[in-house]
Length: 128
Image (cartoon, rainbow, N blue to C red; front, side):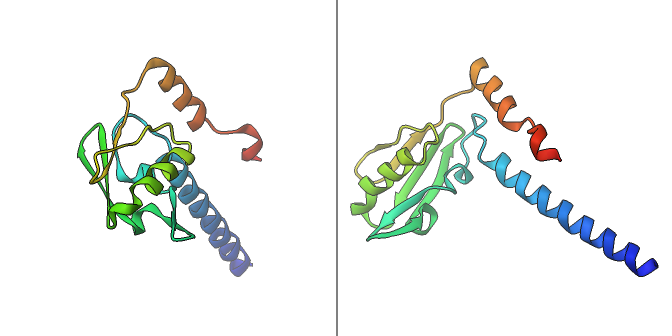
């Protein structure tokens, strides 16, 4: 009997840990107004015919709290990186200066805060 209880508790803990890990990944995607390289973690770039994560074709930095800088390892990748960022539907408008792609992260507005609350609010259907 004790072995069954231990198994059930271990199984429940494993499921809860997986749920928390998923929640953390979901919260990372919520753009809250401060620039972070993690914001671009889902961006996939067409790298010579292969969909490749942006982090594998460029360095991503935050020169300040409102700016992301994407420095490609190959300058000819700049147009593909810009296209990939726009296609990722993150709400960013990338610009390039010939050397890198610059993304200005807009400050939070009241409307954006309300949207963030909606995104972070649990879905009652998912709780069952």
